[in-house]
Length: 640
Ligand code: SF4
Image 1 (tube, rainbow, N blue to C red):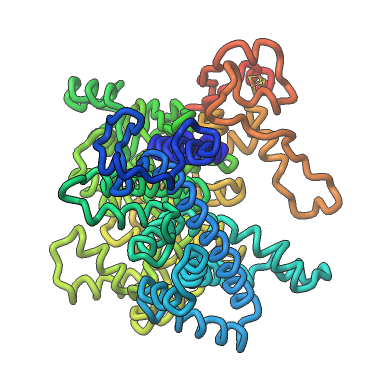
Image 2: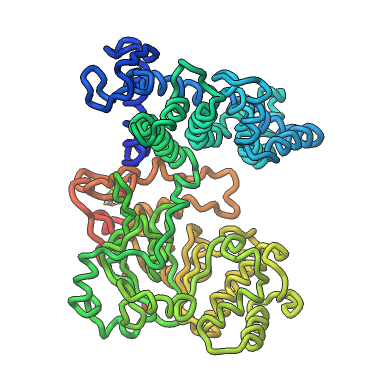
């Protein structure tokens, strides 16, 4: 979604923008509006109440028209506030970028200067500057600009420091760009969102600070009206004519609220973390669609289909649909996914990035973040017990206990602040009634079990002290902590180099054989999946397109996507052979075609492929590890 549309989806920001546009338009049109001159006094009309003929909002102590003074005063307050913001933003941002870019003495000198400014309460500093320069709007503008420079300098320096060591800055240097070009061409555009966010959050204060100085008689001087000086003038008659002070106060309030609402909206659009939903905490379990939940409750959480069949299975997934609900789109991340995992067996889920593998796996334990995820249909059972729509306490019992999860990147899935021993012991304590000593002893055993060399010594190491392969072994040790029946390994070897990958695969295979654990192994690598699994499910654009035993799928893939996917795998000894890449891209999951989702990229597509959804159909097979299913109307031609 474009930033523009995202901003306009934020109702509060739109209200703020509406307020600002209305106020700015009226104050800009002041010279042509049919209103009295703001400084004309009429002592016969002193302190008239609102609604007096010729004075809609009444008059002040000198008989001046309050409406006219408000409009002209708002114009001045806005001009001073915005000018001060622009000056502070330009100078402060330059100081921040230069300081971070050059570092060393320049950074120290500039930042100590900024620290000195920040050592004073900013309003006292502004008062001191105006006291030295003398009262007046221009001097108030200078004072407000100076006291706000540190906010920009600090924020922009912080953002720039994290950028100056990135590779694209090195690349700019290598391309021969000089420092000025790097600062203005590379760094400035990247810190611009930070500058805009800082502007949006400080401009409201600056208008308030300007009004504050005028209120104290240090800003706008009589007879010039600005909102602060009008508020100050009304103070003397607050009891007899409250409207004189209240009306400028209200305009300041509305103006600052409008600016802050727009500022918040802009920040949400520009800040990449907020844009990615950083402030939206996911719920403890994936939301289940209300209709599905009601249906399941009505069925008393009975499973669809033959319950006696699935009650023997540690994991069964039936017709699972998990979608992401965004404001203007429904993303069909996993659609109608079904598979069974018998005890002690390994099932591989394969497909390109975005095919729905991880969403399917995360849906098993309700770990797909909501918002935006929601389970729309289907059931997931553990030995016949329904997990979709199960109470949170029940899901927590299964998580890490009966069904464990190994994440792709152990560097981000392990907590950097706790030793690896503590993290394994915590996983044990969470589900077993053991003492701390027993949990630590079990942690040591598990580290031995996953072949961490010198485990007893390394138990107090922190994740950053271990290599990538060892961290992944710790992830596996945590998964094994409570002797689970099912382990879901989500691309556990993707972040590792080939030799470590082979060790981890061997370890998983040994553990599975030794402890009879059932394994769901997610990967995009055919070689890796075939080394570990007996059965493969191939996913494309959220759907299963083919499933069968490893031998069947390797020996004779029936879906054109599987065939093309296998043709992409480089083979040893095929040096110089052209890689057979799949042309095109998968369809957008919020705008799926009516027919086959692979049709656009399929070299066998015919007209019938695009007219209606293609069902997943069973094909003859002799494998003991389950049915052979293919979602392709031309699959039979491939069997010949
Ligand atoms: S249904 Fe048609 S378009 Fe889809 S994979 Fe089969 S042949 Fe290709």
